[in-house]
Length: 360
Image (cartoon, rainbow, N blue to C red; front, side):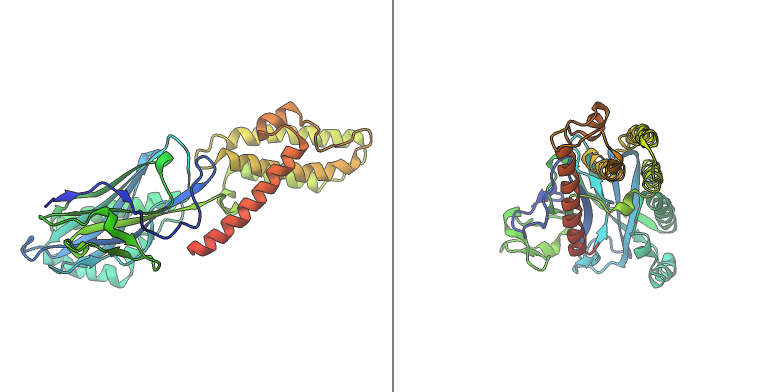
């Protein structure tokens, strides 16, 4: 009968995910779906509290990790201690080949009644929940600092013992939408075989084995969600997005009176588009394919504004785009450009529906 922790594994029996991940053409988000800690009656007789916390390290932010404090609970021996709260562990990240992610779920046991009053105040103020929510990276850094100091304080005030960590290492190229499980035990327990575990239609973890009991294990269930494209709100603080919108709106609000003014506006737009693409393509947090689609939408709007002024030129769906536009947008013809815009609009609509379904 094993002790320690298992490797994370994908639950084969689960509802079909609403959206599959497409490498280099979709985003994923990781949620802590469910977690449990179990302690036998003879385990650490003087232990009083257990802390659920997590840390996430990724190649997207290789020099930093984010920490979250999920729950502080009184230990009840021989009774599973449940987290009972679904929490985002990451923001939306691009599903890019070559990237990686490590999630570490920690169970820390504290001994020492002097900190109980402090913990009660934390629970009354709902501070633990506030330290589990990270809407963006800037907030995540601040929350991580607070959580680190708080965990350090708790460790100093009471005797601390870290149980085995539940660690999940993922190569993004192998990541799948759906539910993963990692479990373990600090004492000899019979672990249920993975084929007997399932996520039912109500998103609950079910153990169908007969000789083992999931209720006597500590475990963590994570859920990987996928979408095709981000909300446009995600880009509004980006310098490249702001430059793109400023130049585009300036052109759309200008009415050229002759061919010379139209050419000047086209030159201004071409120069600005190169500057924008140079800034945007350095941002690893976004998909190259999505950036190209955003630029294609802007290019189409500018074209539609300036095209009525054309007299000597004619536009055809099979006309080739200028070389610099082909390099920036990754398409060759006017028809390719319009297809790119259409695909983006379709992907945005699907993603909005998925976000509503995910309740995000």
